[in-house]
Amino acid sequence: MSVVLDTNILTRAVQPAHPSHKVALDSLEALRKQGEDLCIVPQNLYEFWVVATRPRGVNGLAMSIVEAQVEIASVKKLFRFLNETSALYEQWERLVSQHAVSGRTAHDARIVAAMIVHSVPQLLTFNSDDFKRFSDIVVLNPNDFVGRASSS
Image 1 (cartoon, one colour):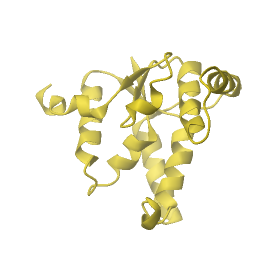
Image 2: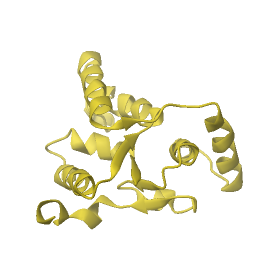
Image 3: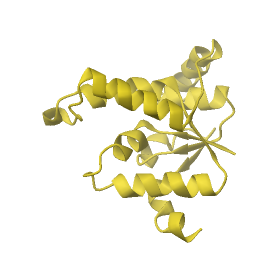
Image 4: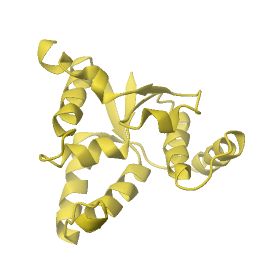
């Protein structure tokens, strides 16, 4: 089966000093050992770029443009990239209307829309509550994989 990664998984994975770094890496390893196909969508890369190039003082990673480009290239090699299709906007519009999505959570709806378009049922995210409204998907929390990567 396939799993789309939320952007927070990607950002934690590149921050060795972050308290959730090991949990992010362990969950990815556990899913790989289970034979899961780990995927990313363009929205992940847009969001990653914003966080990566934003100053630390405003919850960013303070990467240079070149550093961010290198990280994105690496991410695209590590995970299957699901490209945008013409159906994505229609699916996103249906979701934001159906679930009364507003503000920043419209970005999450775009990830869910891509999942539906590509028939990927699962999402790995630290922000499980942000996706509860979307009954079309199964939300996986990385904390549920703690200790499972090395014991498999």
